[in-house]
Image: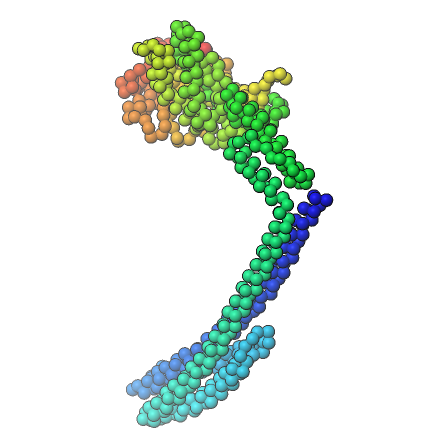
Length: 577
């Protein structure tokens, strides 16, 4: 019964509000329609009627001007007969226009009088209409008669009589214009009355709409208060509990005091909090072993299996600590753990900061990847390269901190360095493993290529090597240089490899000069111009002494000069290890 009662009351409130809204809407539509009709009459009848009366005055002045010009043309010596006829035709045309404007004004005024759906001062309008007819007919009759006599005197060149008639015509015209102005003033008063009527209708519409809206609001508040009075306490408890959970306090619970919908909601809330506490414990525990974003995905989809893996474009990074073997040989286990933990902390942070997923730690190596659903496909290559730059920047920090961690000052750490390989390509992504243990990871040729590139740093004396596809997707945020075209172990297709030099705009002048000279030497090397290649590479070493790729390529060129390659040699180099 309680459930039905709550539902019935809510439905009643909704139905009552809908009825009030419909009534208010219909009333507003009727009143708006009436206002629109009044506005239409004002814009389509009153205003045009005033404009016609105003144009009658203007046409009267234009007729007087045409008549004077005709008289002037006729009084010239010799008379300008062509000009006289043109001005007279213009005078006659304006006369016709006056008749048209007069008829149009009368028709509009009669239309207003005939429309019984709008309030108007029909008596005043009827007086205006009758006076228009009388004034125009009588006034124009006198003017036309005087004009005919003026033209007759003009034809016989009785200029004295012409001037007399012209003065009388001007006086009659001025009198007619004054009467027409008086009619216009009366018409404007009637128009102002129509405007006042519209404003009154508008005010009434606003008042009625406000009253109806206020009534609907008051009734809605009354009904809502009646329904909410019995359930507000439970709702407030739910709200307070929800806010506490939102703030991270998962120790909240709500007393279930009723068996209605609110009681069921409170019980569901308590169950949700219990589940959230369990999930939080899982995330806190496994977040230290698996990236939290992967943990969240596995919690949301606990039945994720290898069959649900997907092939996606990913960027994979392998990082290895050079000199780790010689360093670890002289360390006790406790010291080794300190060093490795600090090393992993320093190198993992750039990966996390640049939204990468740390897949696993392999000895002193790190495997990480970027790609959907954690990073957009357009961004993951660039983020991986940025992480590479930041990891290399942190190697000096690691070198400084290792002696302090071991408690041995003055320990030479120059041999401690990084080797990083980055590759972009299609990979299988998903939970992969057995029935008893699984790992959310990536597999495929791109993983093997990234691992091979990390090892290839030994050959070139570099800290990082990046495949061509990564460079193409990384955009202009970083500076690169092409190192070589190689065939890594386990593959047959040559792969152009690059070195990330730094962020765009941050390279020193000597780095830029060394890069350009190296690129010049590499191009000459591929074209078998050995002397040009040697000259460019030696120039690069003068700018940046000890540059590993330049030194390696110099040694290779010396060997190729002594033992030239075959004619089908394409400039690529095969790495057997």
